[in-house]
Image 1 (cartoon, rainbow, N blue to C red):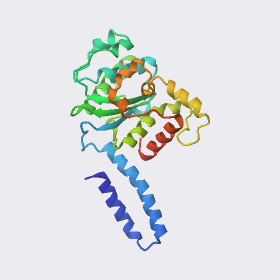
Image 2: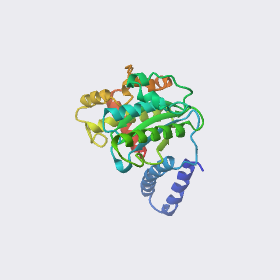
Image 3: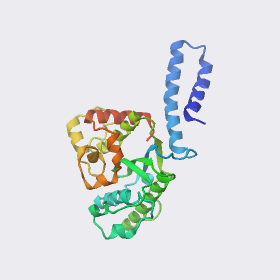
Image 4: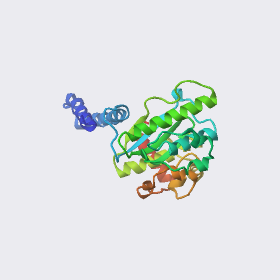
Amino acid sequence: MNLVYRATSILRRLSTPFRKVSPRGINDIRRTTRCHLVVYVNILRMTNRRVPFAVNEWYHCYNRGIEKRIVFEDTRDYHRFLELLYLANDEFPLRRSDISIHKFEEILKIPRGKKLVAIGAFCLMPNHFHLVLKEVSEGGVTAFMRKIGTAYTLYFNARHRRNGNLFLKPFRSIHVFTDRYFQHLINYIHCNSATLYEPEWMASHVVDPQFLGEQIAAYPYSSLSAHAGIRTPISAILDAEIFSITRPARIQKMLQEARQYAQNNVV
């Protein structure tokens, strides 16, 4: 059943007992109920996997370490995950030799086969990551997320001498519905690193937006630089289509739209 229809039905049922309340009271009740339903609908979107990913649709996919543990401990870890974002986006299996005998910049130039997904944006944080993915071939998003999750966990466990799962299962995903929603998502992902410099930016006024904007722009493990037109090795990870459907924004607008996205989604 359509999620919006289910939410609307719940709203009507909850409003029925309060028909004898004053109009203002009813509006207050409905307003509160709608806020709760926004949370309800977004939880369903993230956890209900009965509706498969659709080809040519964009999704916000993300995951974090189990028990919120650190999953990227140094530059080498970040680079390995970025390498996997590039190499795993291929219909063929990963080859260990592609990583073990090449430098970081060389790996991001290795020819690939047919892509599983189009990557629109990304941001890697110490204990989690965010991706914007479009399903290119049927089952592509699931296959891609499985490949990078398995390959990175094997690498991380071997390097840091640990066992077991590294990331939560299953990964989370939110469907991108509109162009405006898409732009808000891109800004939300690129503003994630703001937490490292101003932890309360999401809930309070930013003291020095210019400084924060400079830090976000310089963060090496997001795709913001590529979206700003700066060519770096990690630009190869992104699909060229993304640059025709997004637009750079000033830091104040980025922060505002990132907050709006976070308020409307349980992330």
